[in-house]
Amino acid sequence: MHMANELLSVPVATGTLAVAIGSLALVCKKLSRAIITEKIALMGIMGAFVFAAQMVNFQLPAMPGTSAHMVGTVLLAIMLGPHAATVVMSSVVIVQCLIFQDGGLLALGCNIINMALVPAYLGCFLYRILNGRAFAGRRFSAASIIACVISLETAALLVTIEAVLSGVLLVPSRTFIITMLSVHLLIGLTEGLITVVVLGYIRQVRPDLIAAWMPGKARLSKKTALATLLIFAIVTGAGLSLLASDKPDGLQWSYAERPDQPNFVPIISNDSPHTAAVDDLQSKYSLLPGYSARTAPLGKPDKPADEIAAGWTSFAGIAGAVITMGLVWLLARLLRNNKPTQITTADTG
Image (cartoon, rainbow, N blue to C red; front, side, top):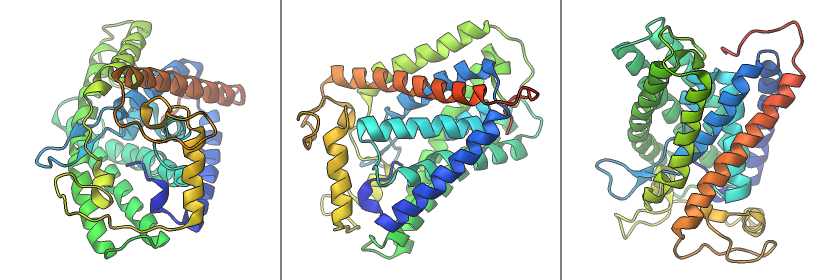
């Protein structure tokens, strides 16, 4: 779902970045009035978990040429509330872009809007409407899955709109939209199932960690429950990431690369020198491009390695999770320090 620089024109990129910055400023203001110290640790650990989970690309069923990874925004929104979820997911996207060259620098505003802002609020709204006060059973699972599917389909639609406005498509917009929505329907269903599993675990061991608090017995202490989530993040980033599929993700498959279709021709064209310059800038200064070691000194264009060593993948997974967790904690602490002393409510959106 991470958009590359080539999918956007400079005006669209600039406009969406302005929208993203303005929206994040408003979200941070709202969160500063609601954040409580007890939630900061959970925010950081969930940021690390989502970063690690996004490294695990899995092959889509019935589509041998493409893969997908969990986005995780709806999971964050259900657990933390939409304000905190937006800040956490934005931190994930920023770390991926600046350090790992995952998602274009020119597309940073779009990726924050598509992956953080819209899914957090839309997903949380849908989940709460559909779930009501049902805290268990099929309704809870259905609400989680539907929220994931609709949020991801909306994000996929936004990607197509941004590409159309940028004028880079070589095919009718309808063709690209249908392809994107079809692929991301499968991805949304898969993400919904993963979300249900993760939330199901948390409900079993520590239901009070979920923003829309669920009744139930706490089977683990809060520190132990948080420790298990952190362990899951480390195991996922360092271990499960090694099993990730090397097939292009749903977005790349939709417009750029289809291993299952050797005659496929990329359906976009962007010869903007500004786009090329931004690509070059990212290539020069990304510390771990493609979640691997650089092949060129910092400050010189880097070329993707033919094969990524497993050790570097594991290192990148752990490093990214730790950096994301640290960034979330720093932002949360800053927002907490600016919180009006008379307000003590938790972020429930």
